[in-house]
Image 1 (tube, each protein chain N blue to C red):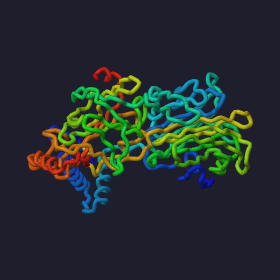
Image 2: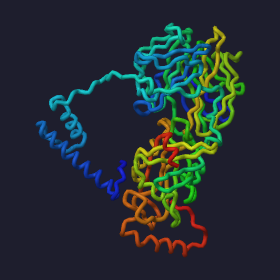
Image 3: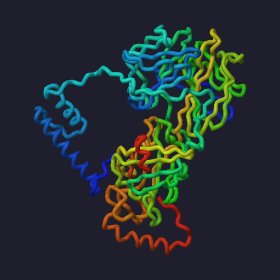
Image 4: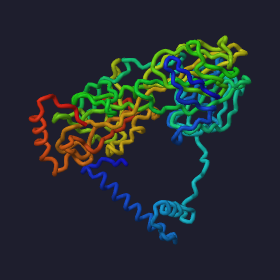
Length: 272
Length: 244
């Protein structure tokens, strides 16, 4: 899989990850694991560890599995209320990375699969947002078109591509790889906000005419500060692990303040 | 390295003492095991590991513990969307903060970003800054970072006494749409500023939590600078909302 790097409305492709489940980010067991039901026109029951965990989860239904750690034991997915087994996944190991999404979806051949992704939650540059596109549909490899131009090329089932972009609304279509269309999905408008990642899932089946989009949003990815300077004057007896100013400094504090006040007629600049 | 806040403010010293003690115990254990202790740290670590071997009666860790599944530990979330967007609106932004144990009653909360210098923007001493590109209260996931001065230009800041909070204390966040969300303090920790775990504190992947930050440690009046940060972590506790 390759990404075509094009200067389309300021799009900058910052990276791409090859396959579902193979993405590895820094860190060990995930602290945030969400499950998305990505099979259209279907409701499912999910058993985990031999016990019914989720019942009647419809298309786009989402669950928080964060408490289960890095491994989902004995996962079995059945058609809701029927016991018809759609997927006996066994033990599902999750990829490394703090932030993981597990998606129930259709594989290229139309059978039900479970794909796990470590989401890139690394901090964004100031004012940027992140777009991630994942192909999890019973469909051939696709190109991603935006504003009539190819922005990602040859994305196959189980794969993902991503770019950090300015906020705004992006209109995207999926077309069979190497063609100009017609689109097998979209165009879909996706709203990108600063400090936020949006993951767009291409889901469903061409053959069954159930192609559909689901989006997952991960906020809180704004740039990290270099530090937190939240005080510029002494307090008496409180304020920290050392109980405020040490005695050797304490008597200087009011003096220092007076010197600063007398010496500067301009309003005090916030010091850190 | 963090140290727990103690009443007499000697967390650092206690921590160092514990570390020294631990090293001595490890050395003694290694010696008891009939091994000569090498001065180099990596080897020493290896030897300490050996003292935990079955020879000392400790069972070997199970490499594949059988997980137990409790359905109550998972929960439904709002369904995936179709058009992106976080659903975040002005209505879900925090607007007020109450910490009854500190006599902080509905201090105004204002959205803040990052200063051109790279530091977190901190509002005036009577306000609390909410990092606007972090998590929002009630979302169920991520770190809601709230920072305020301990003291600014000689005025007491909203977080003047943050370091005296104790685990279990109630914290209440008011949002623009009129909700009052309760949290309880889990930990109060002092970090030296050059050792502040910023990525951990700002992570979007934690369960929902408040991260309250101010300055502490030793104040240098010449630089008008504190050498440490006080960090309070609080997690959702609906019944705590009644406290504020």
